[in-house]
Length: 135
View 1 (cartoon, one colour):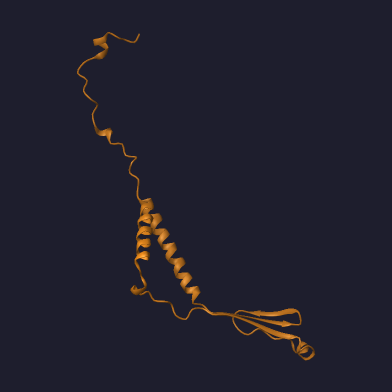
View 2 (cartoon, rainbow, N blue to C red; view 1 turned 30 degrees about the vertical axis):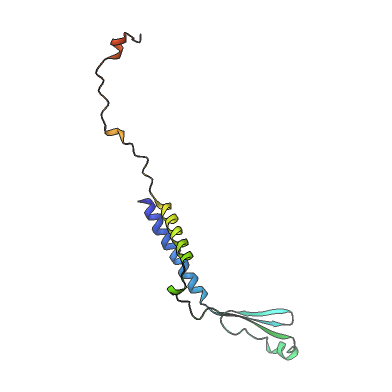
């Protein structure tokens, strides 16, 4: 019973992690930084970074610069086709499945079988027969 619960929890955690991986691989986002001289004035992850104040713009308009980092996510996810699947991949997956399945086999060797059997019937009393008694 305990092994089944661990397996179910492991499957759920793995599926959540894989779903999050697919979700984050399709995200696109932009990081925008605004510098005035050598000083970082603003960083924006959602929109445009704020420019310098009007006083700074008038005096040092040549020193201001913007840096934009854009990270593109996937637009389309690749669909699985059976034409790309060959024998080596099938052989690997079968071997992996069998070895993975063996991790969750319940070991029942702790059971004692001889408890339910009666002791053997001894027809002769060996202490009397050999005349050996403990004193």
